[in-house]
Image (cartoon, rainbow, N blue to C red):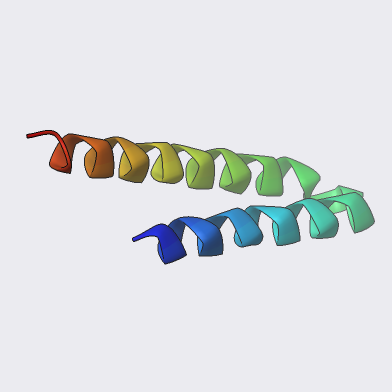
Length: 53
């Protein structure tokens, strides 16, 4: 599961690079970035909840 979190973090980094290069799609990429951030937060909460005895 931690690999998925790393993959999503790398995906956000790649989105930031593309958004910096192409300002015409920056607004769309900001929305995608936000969605990925919420997914990562949700996954981290699920993993923390699963590990509670």
